[in-house]
Amino acid sequence: MNINFTSNTMNELICHFLSAHTDQEIVNLFNGCISAPNPDNAYALIYNSADPQFYFTDTFNEDVKPNSHYIVVGLFYLHEINDLSALKAKIQSLKTKWCGS
Image: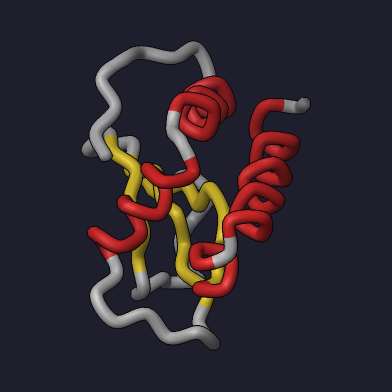
C-alpha cells in the first residue's frame, strides 16, 4: 500500500496509516502480500522508507538494523487476521505504540 505524503516523524506516518485504513483494508493488504499463510508463523507489517509503502512479508530477517529503511510496524498471526476482534485489539495495541493513544 503506497503512501504519498510527508510526515515529520516516522511515528506520525505509521500512526496515520493505522488510523486511515479500515480493518478490511489491512486484511486485504495481508491477503495481497501473503499467498499461503501458515497459522504458526508471525507476519511482519513493514514500512519501507526507501520505497514508501506498507506491506506484509513472510520472509523477515531478524538482523534488520535500526538504521535500515525497513521499519517493522508489528507482527501479525493468521488468527489475528481472521478474527475481527483479535485484529481490532492488535491494531489498537499498535496505535498505542505508534500514536501514543
